[in-house]
Image 1 (cartoon, each protein chain N blue to C red):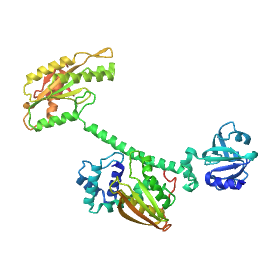
Image 2 (spheres, rainbow over the protein chains, first blue to last red):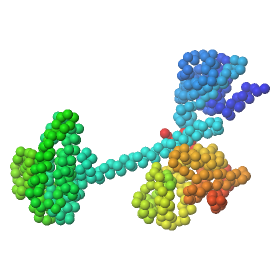
Image 3 (tube, each protein chain N blue to C red):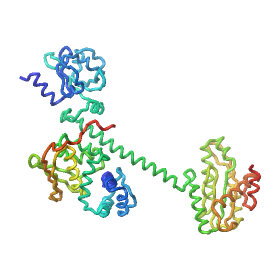
Length: 336
Length: 195
């Protein structure tokens, strides 16, 4: 016949976090790991409910209630600090002698291992806690490696975007690309024309119809510009509503005048957006590389086109001007 | 070969021989990049190119370098996580040796696409073992030699290792546990890791 001492010796090995409770709800024995959680406790004879707060099921108020829970999951926590939470299951002993309650940490095991300095020897060899701790650490390490990779990829993506040559909204080349091509044309000593285009009344569209309407207008502008130019020409969006076009091999102002006029006319075609019509126009200023004496800088030629553009603006917008020597003086007079 | 393995080699070379030597290795390998990412996969060809470049730059036989790397992986504080994961294998060295059978599965549990060759521990008599390393990862047995040696130190046991060559395509390491508690091992605290 097995004595209760035999039973507890077995339980020490199999489930070292058990609590043996008598019919009056007093503790008659606890497993070695449970003992380790409160090493200074005098466990023997203490009331189970004095040590543990039963969180669920809520209807349990007495030892008799507790016995009724046999087989179902209990949620408990220590009444004193640290209030480690525990899971448990109760098995009644025969002849109303009380019950054996087996406890485990559940998900609180991570803190418990730290708080109580537990080792593998505190868990039964069949307990999966050690495997779980292993998995948590392994996954954290793998996750950290992934996180580092994501950070580096994000950095690389930002760098790539900065280096990219395309304006994402319109699909045109961007300022960086235009600078690059302009530098190459000058470096190669090629003849070319540079036209600086600035939209008129674009701010009004943005202000009255919203940014989405503004974006639709910009996309339409890009389409018109691409249609009005040759494949070998460069069309770049260099600012909010500013564009630069480079025409390689062009020495004739007449071609550019025709092109600019056609461009402005087509840009003035209203763009339908959300049931409304968006109306813009454009001013343009152009300079030719052949009007400069070599060597000259990209900044100089950009400035000439800019000056011509503002001459067009001052002359009443929606028009095109060529750069002429001396225009800078007019600009200085006009802009105090 | 998994990025984790390539990356481990990189970390080992860079911290043992210096960043400059690692750059020399990668320059010689000519793979078009200087760093391996732990969470990407590389072709075996890329890894093998790197390994033979490493052998040339460091001017040491590959098996020696790989064994040092195994030791580094366990004993260097930079890669403490790996040592901790290995220590979860058992409370003493013999238990740790027996846990090696599960190592490829454990590795896959942590990183699903990390495939390590199978390991099999054969116990001939108490304290006398053979570890059979199946093929699949060139040089793996040499890395394991370093790992086994360093883990012996970690547990404070005196261990003698011998690479016995190849049997039926698998490499065999003989392990003799000369003395347990030979020296003070390093502490292993289950909950020391801050999450």
